[in-house]
Image (tube, rainbow, N blue to C red):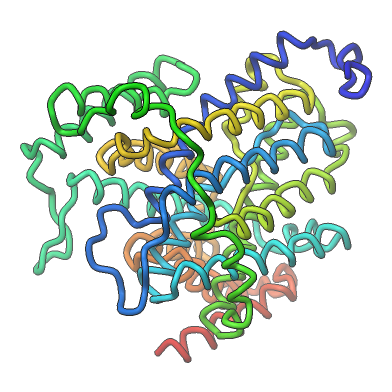
Length: 444
């Protein structure tokens, strides 16, 4: 085992790698409870006609297994200390844009995730995936990440009750004195304090403390003894295989845009995380990442497996940097994290304790972290600033990640051509321009 993971070469050992894997797990364990909440559209009382609500128990199990599969492939095949799980932002797009806004049922949306995963595998094996990543301007990549961050934070503010709808101004500050809103504010403050203090897994521990506070104040029903904490693993039967069963229904323009969006966002997430974590771990050699194709294959395969099980796109997690900070240098770190995700399956009864007021602070904080990419956008160049700004602002204002991407990708070639920078526009951007223009034409 030591020889397989090159412990001696990388200067590590079992104890260090185990602690690193545990640290990574604690840093991203919040997804086990946030993902079912997001995909089930907790807090949304009225769903579009003909749309049903996905089973939270099945999503919990699918989330844990997909994370374990992805992390195992990453650890054993690519040998990187990077863990995977259903991605934040991608799950929000799945729930709030595809299901809630487009009125596409979750089973068809899962079929879209499955198709995007298959395309990922083909593009990764052929080597085209890296070329497509390079075709998208870095400024737009940063804008997409920041826009998703604002969108996720907006959802968190809504779910917490801090922001309410207003018929005249669209939104307004909610009644902060409501008990559930106060609980969410408590959770937000506690989580911020923990993260600011450098506590590993601050988001996860913040959710635990908020749940305890909710139980103590009577806002959340306490778990009934040991059975309320540990229980049998929820069945994935309600969601298993639905992605494959509904494949014929993805042949629409709406689903084409959905699949493209899944592709874009996961492109950026995985590439950015891979570069950041590999650099932090000192694994980059001659400005190249060894086994990059294997690492990209890990999230592709995990996305396909996750969609069949019943969850949105699985991707690499930047929280893996916490494990690297704790000393993780090999794939054994990811293997340990995978083991903890499987162990977590028996804690499904806690889903009833993790309410939307408990998960709302996590959404807001993840939004803060994702918005950090705003600093990398070249705001001094107007031809860049316009499409970047429209991408960022359109996502929360239209309640759609896809719409934000579409608007930004339409304006980019326009402003660049007018500025005389035609040679800098990759042919892929012209293709996307046409796709998104047609999208708005048919949508109108």
